[in-house]
Image (cartoon, rainbow, N blue to C red; front, top):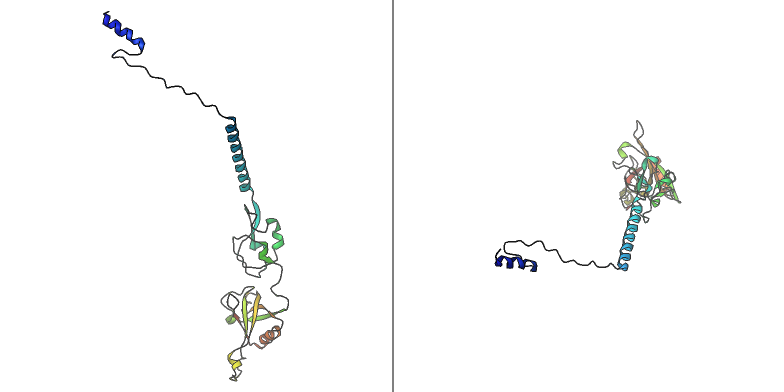
Length: 235
């Protein structure tokens, strides 16, 4: 071996690789791991526990459902509620929402609707009443309407009407101003029957004031009364 080769071989232990050789991989510097503080660990555990408790409460609230009474079909004001008009549903009920519980369904059957009820809505206690549409100081006047006198609009409880006095058939017009402005009596439908077989007559029970009741009954007897639907707002 030549002296030059010996010098090259001697240079290898000093970290300088001889020409033509490939150096091996260099290991990355070791970094010492930080020590975790006990306070940080305790805080992390507390946050995890609080989050778990919040999720548990939320799941309990979502899972808690209440059986309530619902409206199954259209119910007009003043109509007596039957079991067929009502249904039941299980929902997550907000405490602020007042609804009749399913266990109290029997207590509302037989009562009257205080407002118009629509299918699919919840039934609230304030929407039913045990009071009749005939109030103190009023009288109920039955009125028979022939088929041609029955309005095309269905007569429903609570509907505002006017009882109009018309001249008797064959009566002469006196020319007085009273003949040009027929007298009317305000009333409210309490109940309307279906058309009678054969005659088609519909009987409508109308509540009027106690002072107007006898007058309206006299018009009915004389055949000089006509029933007119009032405006929706009662005006």
